[in-house]
Length: 327
Image (cartoon, rainbow, N blue to C red; front, top):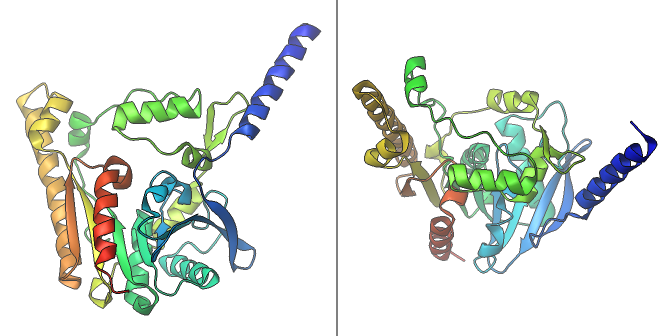
């Protein structure tokens, strides 16, 4: 390569790196770090607001997953988000990923913030945190809100035969990772929702050319979180509960989406639909057995990231729920 070409390449890399450094998270939060263990600090986001404290917990995502949602809730309460250990800007120790330790981490953050009875709101493994905290420390919270995360681990996931998965598997188009914005556009087109760019930048490295790079959540952390799961003890929860559940879209809508080519494929798609409905019903029943007064909302056509796919529903129902809580 000629010297002039080399020089241009270096300049291009420097310009790309500078562009990365110039990017900033537009969500209006303050960031602090709270020590919860020896050499372990958790990232805590504070969006401000007035009213009761609302504390968001995530699973494989960070608190930045709520960067778009949180500002819409500051007229309901004072909104915070906690990034669990092992993810994003929080410390990444080799241990401490059980439900019990995660709950302890949350309590220490609440102590540091001076929050006596916040409303805890969790998605994915954040729901595991809610269940453990609600059963063991009910005096430390005002209420629990499950964002498609009230799962009884004894029920297990929806299990499909290999041939069934092959028949009905949706194969999304190849993701466009040329930039974080391109990746978000791909998510929107493919799934009808997109993660905040700030969250994507927590989950993926930014390559020098501005493209989306390596996934940053380690397999070891994910495995440790699964190994630390505990069955929820709903019957011990003595605080108000609001639980959102994502229900699959109507079968005729799925037929239009997947276009089964044979009668067998249509039957298999119907079987998957029935299994998915049964799984939701079983988890709702498990929650209601333990917390009969729990408010349950089944949102048809929602996806796992219910606070993205059904943001307006979540904001409306959360507002209504918080207003019913004793002050």
